[in-house]
Length: 300
Picture 1 (cartoon, helix red, strand yellow):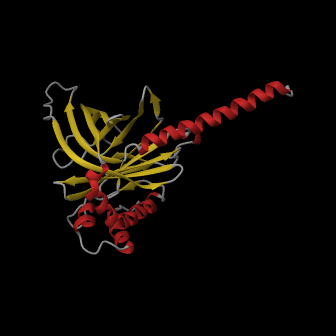
Picture 2 (cartoon, rainbow, N blue to C red):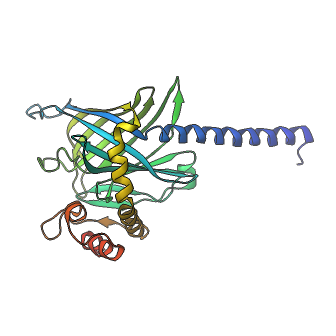
Picture 3 (cartoon, rainbow, N blue to C red):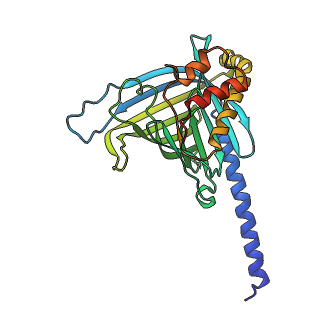
């Protein structure tokens, strides 16, 4: 049955407006993500809240503070890469975590357990209108991945997702009573800067068994904006070192391009990967870094 012209006109107009609205929404998303760049005073606060076992002894609350610079190091129409740098005592710079935001990304790695990540492609429908945040370790190896929709309401931009991850750096060298953190990540871009609020489950995961909850945790990472000039030393450090780390990212991209399960060794020659890259000699050229990274990848 043929549509009457008025009805056809209404359908065409509706589809056109929907496309425009989606484009405008994407620009709001991009604005929120890019608002996370800059110089910040950062406070980290975590407290364990609920444990199902009455004899569980809750860990002490964790608090710390930092001075951090976040810089956009890659940007395309559908991807924004933010590199974080810690500033210690106003002069010392430590390459910190990295977050990649990709629009409607379908090829993703998700953490399983025990230094292993599984490749899990998403359908076009599952990814539509959503942004995937991929968080990487200081050596640009994988950490965790989450996909969700940005919401813009009442002057705040918010993105929320649940994602499995390894133990946080504040705990992985101190405890072994759980092996997966199920992160509830809420990113809010606010007038003062941005907030990373967390509702986390610390769980024990074993092959072929259901996850066992050890304890829940509440976290607040508060990023309060300060003048970008206050982070000049970090900007200068990155300008002098960005070429090496661009090579490292490219080598890891080649690893991820295999699209198969990824398992990494905890150390090689008694050292973590970041120790070789940060402090080792001879790891500045592409071939040297490639050989090093490959030593940590367990053959599948």
